[in-house]
Image 1 (cartoon, rainbow, N blue to C red):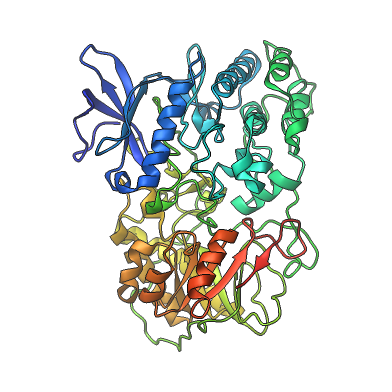
Image 2 (tube, rainbow, N blue to C red; image 1 turned 90 degrees about the vertical axis):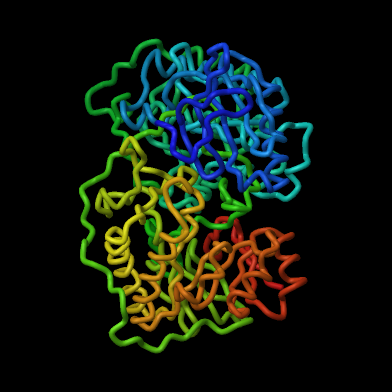
Length: 599
């Protein structure tokens, strides 16, 4: 990937000759020293250099990589986390990511799989010996070099003797490859957490499927914590090894020394499989959709089912990339050479009719009442508690009777595993023509860069708005308004505002109020975009409630996910805003893990 016009030409004495990858927090360049040594240089975006907590976490990343040395990691060769624009250079290792290889070439087998497994076990040995827990071991963080795998990106790693940035209790990681304890006790994760992640990663490498793969991050997290892994297609002896690694209890997982001995039993060649068996190494890479999911007792009449279009990336405390707050390090960026993987799309069925741009006859629009009891149920609907007057639910769920209902839809990204519902050219692509993903949640970003494409995207999203109106909802909550903050080299705030304006016009035509979801940086434009109120996650945690309250005349519905966040917002805004604390997975009432509290 060639340099862009705005890219710097050098940093720290290294000439920058090419782009290797980019993400919401920074860019990775191919650099060259005066002697000709090639390095991978991670450069933090300038706007995050002003955030001291982000700088501190970047320093910890540099320190973690310096502490770890081994044949299966990419060592740091130079860094300046205190520079005006922080940067770190690591040894350049040519190779593709495991996620790219599996997506393009299929699952690994035989000697390839054995070398990967043993190499990763040895990498974790070196990492853990240095007193570091990686916490984000996943296919995109494994670089497949000629002489074996390299574990990269220590952006959210945790040094055992460093508690400075773990006291907030924010959950960080990538849901399909996280351990149960990363959801329940993120401050207390140990080396056993990486063993669990390794088990998930090896299942993915062997089959192309993830052992925990819900239709949304919420359901995936639920599966990680409470359900057995799906190991279809995993042949012995790897199947038994994976079962041990994926035990819900950290103490029951094998220690690395034992795991290494177990992995040595993996065959050097592909295991022959009898005709008709499902555990062949040639198993399809398509994700199984047969896994049971938590029941939605309020809407499914007692039958389990997946809520494919329930959206919302959920609390920013659970996001790996948190927009401009930048509190959780440079994840999603490799610290060695990483080539973005391509993703195939199914034939599109979406409409190409233009979206409406001006209301012919605007219906009466009623925003939600201010300062009332409310509930956030986008993870699963259930009967509201006594006194609740406002509820937000997925657009697939029925509205709650007798209250003001808000309909949540995914408007700026394609739902995971639903890319085929969109025309291929409406998916954002990089310079190589590969689909650009919000990798933390497996969702493809939509291409909102031109008016013509925004019109077509709006046409599809507006059909969901129509469904919301037909069901009796009073408002709509388009999610992922902040997608542009995760892809700043591709998307802009103005493009996001332009699409949102199309949606607000249509919502008003249908008599629906429309909410701004998070995205404080665009709150000043709420009137020009046509937004009526705000749904805000963790404004207490991030000290943003006042700015949202001012921008939306106190018509703000707040959802917090931690005791600290609830305490903060209740102490300052209990008499002004609508406030609720929910469990981080937003599960239905009656489901294990459910939690709801108000001021």
